[in-house]
Image 1 (tube, rainbow, N blue to C red):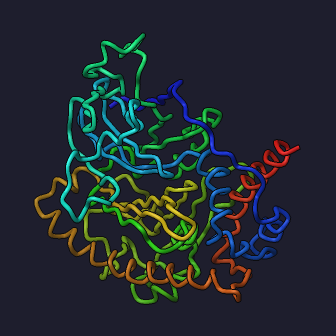
Image 2 (tube, rainbow, N blue to C red):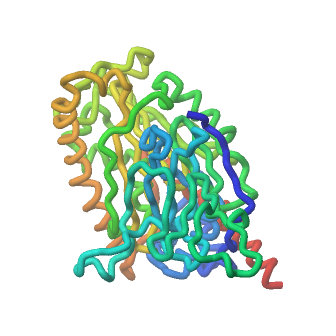
Length: 422
């Protein structure tokens, strides 16, 4: 499959950002070294006006991970996804490239992947996310037909319309890049390409050969009742594993965490977690259930790794596999989470793979049964009049890094809002 960057001249209107509804000076206390700063203003986790500002300041400008290319391995394979309220189609086109199209028909704005008929109990529901294989996309409303590149190839009864040419109509193509098999989109024409920005992280992960790994059991959970940042913070900080996960995380204690120094301008954060046993893994036995990846070093087999490509992609690595999470905000207090395992193809092809995977997934259920309720409880607390701007432990130093990355974008957007208002 060709991994290319695609862009399109057919762009939508940019979101008007304006000034931050939280005075930008209030973020100064959260920007700096973990030992000196405090947590973000609690309103960033629940205020509707700030959510709109943040979507324009961050998600409208940054590269957002929306899945893996191995989810659509063959020409014609596609899946749909909604990002910032935009219905999108992720498709493997006839040119053997990954392309992301708007699902909005350029005739009357019908979502072209919506079903033409639905049962009574779904009449008022939003169009469902779907996947499959196709040669074209046909809007169910008036049967306008688009090819896999988004070109209009069929439009019934339009011959009497003055100066109408099918060649003038095309589904908007969203700017797209594929990095190590991960599909990223960007709604901004001005953003710098993502691959060069992640070269340091790519070197760190080289021995896993992530681009050759296969996603397994991709699962999406919608309407989780907490702000997207709470999910990211929970995934990355290592203060809670010794406590919340005290039994299943024993092989990788919090005290061994070794975060890689975050430098200004970096677009990723990562660190490694030496383990107390060789070939430890996140399952009930705390030992690898699958063959260790042969290309890993002794140090890599004796540690687990975590990484973040903000705002949306979270990665975890162990000696026999990896896992990825993407989080997409849907409101100030809700988000959609997608998770999947990553395995070498040789592991997936093993006859006993599925039976062993069931054991591994039991371990993941333990973590989710602790993390997701904790996130929901944190959201509840952040909306309290007593919500703190607490201090950080050294085992939460990554939270200060996340703050710095976000605040840099908040300040840029706020300044542009101020300049535009003058």
